Length: 341
Ligand code: CTP
Image (cartoon, rainbow, N blue to C red; front, side):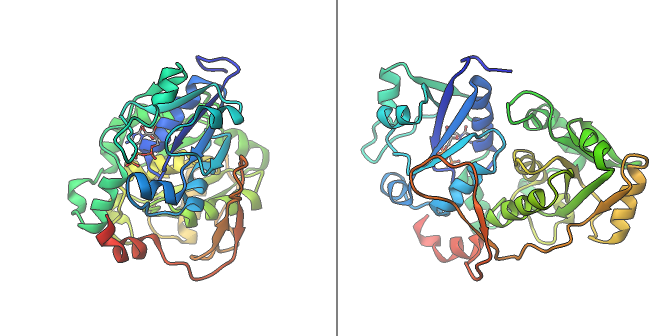
């Protein structure tokens, strides 16, 4: 299925700092307009020059785009002030941006050249989510009560959840969504889960808070998908009150982050909270007849496992997981650089 611009390659660029569902929603809308979507990511130096230092470095910000199911290729070092010649190098015909004005250090519209050349397309900016707002939650420790969403409220966002469940082409059904009810996980959106399960009658299950969707989460999900390529990766996301510590993102935001990730086949919203064999037994019973074997992956992805993104100005659609130890966590980094934001 193709979008409005048949056989097209579209370009979308940005900082993609602290990747959130506003970014992925812009990416999804762009994908629905064309066929192939190339995402350019600005360098740390250029972001610092034009708007202030990003929290995440270029590799981390590229990684977020690589793991997004609607993205075909990622190009590091994309110029902050949009450059038509640069976009054409990647065979793209149009640049897509949210309907907010993006300005450079001199206050000029970053997309003025694309607009003048009629090669600029706009999608709707997602209200109510921004990197600044997320930093505020972290730095000012906004109480959870100001942004929490309960499992019962999440049903009011069903249209948004359905859109985010769409396949890499941006339209067909793909990721299943289950929500916990008194009878067990109830299907809210259907996708590829049952088809995948029919082949092997097994599934891999990972549960967690998924508070802030960082490189650690992405590498864990990638490692699972690669270790079990024929099995559905089912991910449980705990409700705000069941998270191990106050989540920076609420249940809806955390669910949307998982849905946009290309390694996830199904999401269970508000599953039983303990990571235990009882949970697996419970899920197996609830998916009775469909699944003979529900298992946690038999390896642990280290808390500090890190990754390498090829940063050579060539498009990339994959990354490598390394085993390096010791990088500081995003939270530590923000707190230690608080004065810069
Ligand atoms: N975007 C959006 N909705 C948001 C935030 C961003 O549609 N709430 C879009 C932007 O319009 C742009 C793309 O996502 O087309 C990448 O934006 P980026 O430069 O990374 O983000 P900002 O616009 O600076 O927003 P934020 O501060 O939230 O990162």
